[in-house]
Image (cartoon, rainbow, N blue to C red; front, side, top):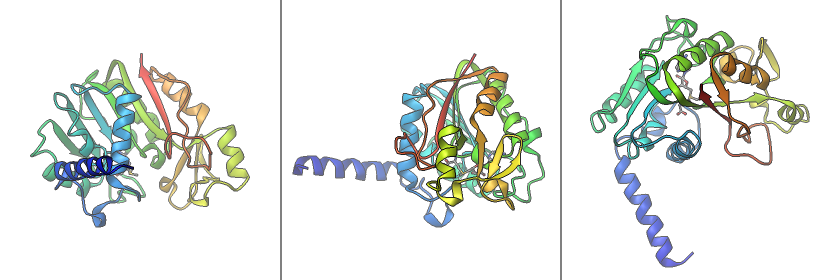
Length: 264
Ligand SMILES: C[S@@+](CC[C@H](N)C(=O)[O-])C[C@H]1O[C@@H](n2cnc3c(N)ncnc32)[C@H](O)[C@@H]1O
């Protein structure tokens, strides 16, 4: 790489660090998984724009927003739009409310004390009964990154109905899964998939897990069920699905499988 190109890349890196200063949580506070916090956020920002048609004036809902991994990179893009994030871990929401909203008032966050055996054992509200605190047909884009991979079938069913309710007709949903299909099952059976992701224990119905004690640690879903679920709630999954590398696949887009669905 030439010196000029190197200098330019360094400059961009410094500028982006400056821009996000104060909004990136310290490593010790991050509970949303390993990996490069900023790189993963930027990766999904690109998918939201390129695959889900996010625009600078979109109204967007981030379900299971964690500690702002997706919100931070969107602050420089959603200049005329609105972002709403909901999550069940209070410290993540508090961080976002203190670090992001004061600088970007069009970014707001909501905490709900919903039970999840992995993330919020003291939760008092059932996900399967939680009504998203937003009106019908409000959002252009809704997304969940690594959230349905930690939720059980009745909860996923209800959230899908809520997503369909709050999306505008023509709105898009980007959701990541660990999908069980012919290809991933072959890889799982042949031992290529890392054990922590193989999800070989049946939970119930279409859901499988790697951890029978805490099924929400990793939940994988049968692909046919997911497509049917979306269809039953008025959403059509776009084909092809953007499959991920989680199961040991050689050709992939991201780590988890990415489904884009259009609200009819
Ligand atoms: C692996 S983290 C991903 C967080 C975020 N989407 C990201 O990519 O940075 C899973 C998130 O799902 C959230 N979560 C789990 N169950 C939830 C529920 N019923 N409603 C909303 N969020 C939930 C957890 O609190 C956690 O923040």
